[in-house]
Length: 111
Image (cartoon, rainbow, N blue to C red; front, side, top):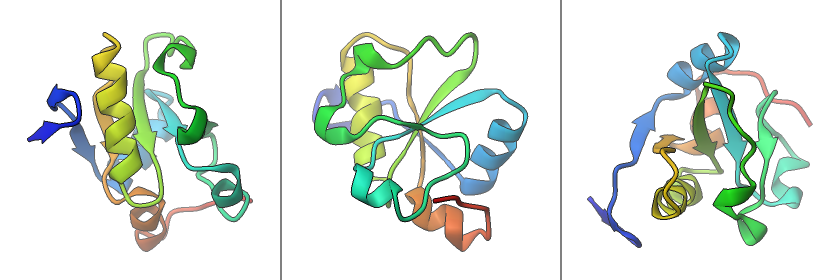
């Protein structure tokens, strides 16, 4: 697939895969939704980095864990992964379907 920054190397992860990896502390989940969205519901443990001010260089060192992006439905998280790759970072995974898929899978959220 070709994205905004040329060849996209974004990997889709299911809600169940993200939940398992998060529970095992193998990923850093970066939620790129805006504060008004995350105030309603967010995935426990997610790092909030709104897309309106998103800068790949601001992603903290994942300390050996994989960085995975999430949003509402998967569009912004894919874009964030593409932006990170364009900035030379090896972050290529996102939660396919976003928090909507997370909720549909019956996984917990917090406010």
